[in-house]
Image (cartoon, rainbow, N blue to C red; front, side, top):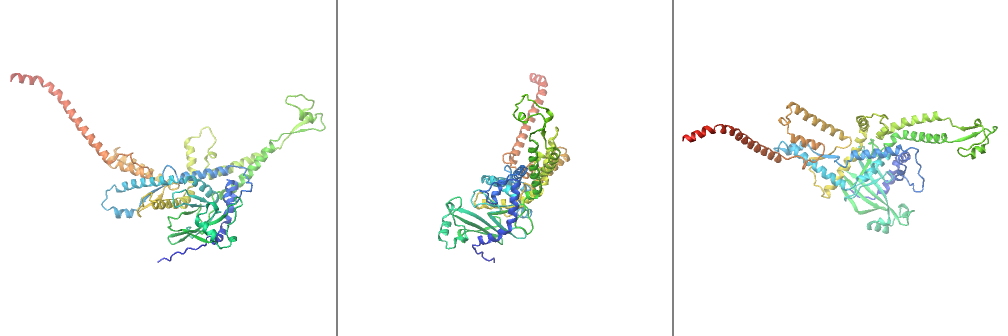
Length: 533
């Protein structure tokens, strides 16, 4: 029998202990912000009274924004589900027994409709606008915390400055502690009662007026602890647990999702994607600065006048365009930097670095060759190549984000009774991002199989196959609801019966038509017989 969990107000103490382990990652994230999106530094340090320095290049900012959009579109597409539901084959065989042979096709169609309904509920929560911010933070810092409220509200995103996490050897979060600064106007009655009745010294807790406003602020710690297959969560203020915030949830129902971009064994946090290319970004910024300064120096126009000549420099300075003055051309010359070749070397090196960064951040515009005849297939092949090169990133993001995010959503929707609870034999699987490559392969294999059947049957596919089931299987792979699109078995049977009746009527009409000429040819003989009678 498992031991009962005891809630303890250890949020601030544990936060102070674990905070020391993340200083390296915060400093690295600030360094990455300098060469990509400087405004993102506000997520990691106070920059209100500090002037932000801007880089001499914008490729870093464009790369992060472009890659964040790519990840958002690939891993959480808005038009199709990024997941589907499948049934365990062993349990399916146990429960199927004497069901029809088309049972799996019917079940997959039902689960596809359920996935579409789940996606509609997720889209209604408007998480997409927050997920774009999450991908930017994840690419720059490598670590992000998602908090999904128990109601149907929007998710919230927290940077590495606001939380700490402790993981086991497998990478599963064991402790998650979120620190929030709550202004007095946002205090609940329970927080206000704790602050007013607290006898603890205020020096240990932030209970002082804010520098920006006259309102008091307190530190609210959300503590999440894993014990066995449960997460125990509570909030505390000034060392006092808020009783109304205590909750016990399953692993899939935890409202906190601590993401990290790369899963390092034995590490609580992760390096960022941008940090892998920080050397190129720094080199590009330095060369861009040198190129800008050299171009500014070369573009200066300074006239030199020989002091021993007959030309007066005042006449040169005051002369208007087209004016005639006394002088000699040899006395006047332009001061030139003579650095054109050096600037060309800098430009060539900048182009090489930009090409590497364009490939790293999936910017295809700088990778397509500059020529008059660039075919569409060439552009498609370049895009396909760089998409496949990020398969490892897609796989990491699928494991760290898509799986826990989807399980949390299904848990919450079932708890709120917005969707029916699934049977234990049914489980969700990811089909977007890296997994989409396997889905596309499965679709192509099915179409190839149908082509072989058509070839073996001499063009009559229905001789060996069931076309309707093939259509349903293809729609299931592509996550397309076929309601109202495909004719049902009853409609097909009714059409076949109607065609049979029409064919029978047509045959009767043809027989009648063929009998008319014979009747006409026999009419004289019939008339003669009638006259004789």
